[in-house]
Image (cartoon, rainbow, N blue to C red; front, top):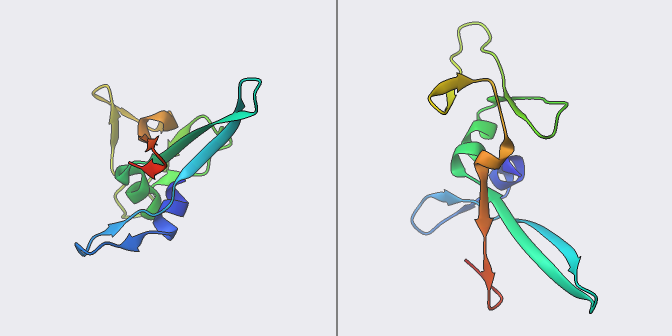
Length: 105
């Protein structure tokens, strides 16, 4: 999600780039053919960390890995519960997007 939000960002009239990409989950609800729609984005922090190449490739889709610094580069330290971590749960970066009366808020 972070990669696509960065790729499809737009220039806002305030001169800041904003994300224009929302991930939607559509699933059946009940027996009458109704559907539930859930929409999500990732936080600006996650989008920035992805843009700057801070995340390492992970074989576990339930974990995000912070890569190690190479050479003279500096990688930011990520803290969770006042302790530095190198892996974390992606749920920390998820932002809910609510749909009301067919308008996204």
